[in-house]
Length: 469
Image 1 (cartoon, rainbow, N blue to C red):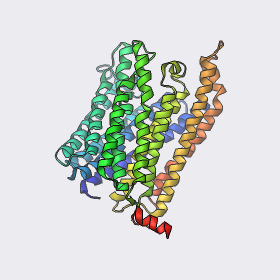
Image 2 (tube, one colour):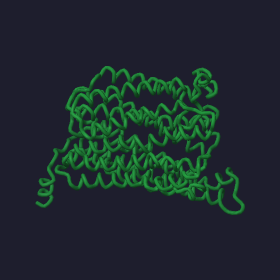
Image 3 (cartoon, rainbow, N blue to C red):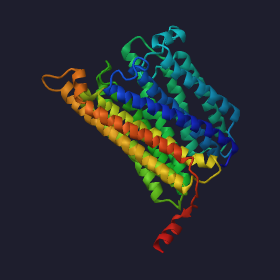
Image 4 (tube, helix red, strand yellow):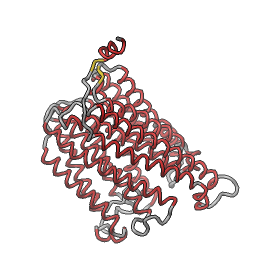
């Protein structure tokens, strides 16, 4: 660890992984409720389990981004964090608020929760992914503003690199776009416009800047490639991400009452959105191929490479599959959408957070990397989670294709629930894959508790000579 203030990142990383476990547990519950409708009813109804599952995803990723920023920024800025006390205060406030929101979903009927939290004064609740009570949204906004202030002062008063400036830009965008969660027009079309400004422009806009900066940082540290080379790649990636991501918002405007020109804008720029993810894949493999040293933390390098590949497949390929308006007309809201969402979030954001944790946590514990034995276990967890996510995506895709054919095409389309019975086998296979994913996550956590020897770093030339000899 280069700077003492980086140690605050450990709190955020531990909380992120803990909440990640909760998210996957509720995912497994949801999977069972698809095939056993009254599982845990009335204690955890499907709509509540889904809210907890998706909200935990957002909250734990934010914890991961914050921890990554607190670790990365002091090193990039070459100075201590502006305020460690503020970072710790915001951590406990955010964790407490997050836990309270989740518990309120589980313990209080949603309508009663809206009454208790003053939703009538500033109505913001009841929208997908933005179900948080109004007071909770305000708390999240204040935490994020304090976090960006802390990071911003550190960056602006220290060394300014492309990586920390891109990261800061993404974090500022994250806060600004969150403010649109408070905009809830009575007109449903306008509501959807602003709703997508949060949901789409987060995950397909400013979060991609955060992803690019984190990936670039890890690759600089693990490959020894010149910073200038990596920064040039990063410029190109974020430019394409912003151009395609902002106008690509239109692929959500197809059938909600928006003007027809969005059919063209959304289709064209939505189809271009895989480009930055393809560039990210090329970026990761190029940097590893050009590396000047073989870093002791091989597991972190594996996560970095996996991020590029899985982000391209999930956000790029599976996004493109149903982004064109004539195709989306049939697929919108089916299991094809769910297939895309699962692999995209895992590939683009879950993996990069696990990557930065894999790289930073050993350093926060005073080591170059986890032991060789621990890294073998961690790489097993990589393959367990990644392969199971591929199968989850494939099973949901198959379910979606059958659903579209039976429910939305042909002269005699079948009712929704009849179709659900016919694709039940895919849900069972998805559930098995989800359990394997949970096992992989447990293996990932266990790897940090395995002791053993750590291999020294080698230059590529030394390793090549050793292999040749």
